[in-house]
Length: 112
Length: 116
Image (tube, rainbow over all chains, first blue to last red; front, side, top):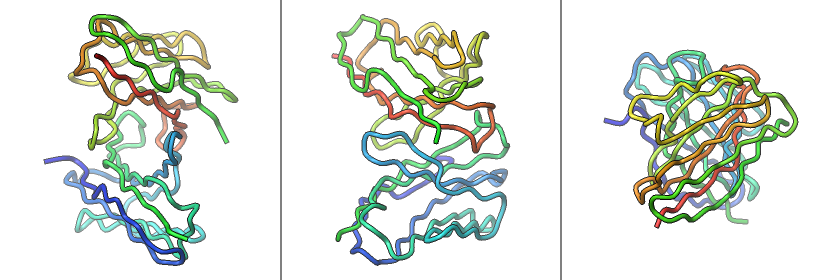
């Protein structure tokens, strides 16, 4: 069983839609949860991070963590064509970067 | 924001040859650099962690004699794939960090290696 599972998509939505991206995981020790956004031909960039359970909001983006279900989500409100990218979830049991587990990424296209 | 570059972005080499990939932090000094590998439809997997001036730490299952890492300066780390084989064909991506913390990694754009 993979440490982190993420639906690779692709996912296409019309502009203005609410997008829901999800990951599940198997390791109950994971405490740190991150979402990265990767544009074509670019490296991943950190979008949001959350420690332990709960929600975190940043503009149009909301990250949710449900540790009881081992499930994390990223919601994008009022999606824009500029949101078209691959979104990767990542998680870790410790604060060290050498213990990071990534999902495979979900490719999102927002259609104008 | 912090910028990390990789060179080359795409390389094709023949089986048995070696290929070197460079990772540079352009506007900051990186005490720690990480090398990842991603096979098609799979996750980014950490290969090794390198700190400037010291030997790299390899993850389990990664052959240190095959994947040579040199972190000679605070802005440059290199990964050399020695005696490459077709199964080494993959997407190699580096990240750089001021320290080894989770939230301060800046990723390069990656290098696509194809071994024929």
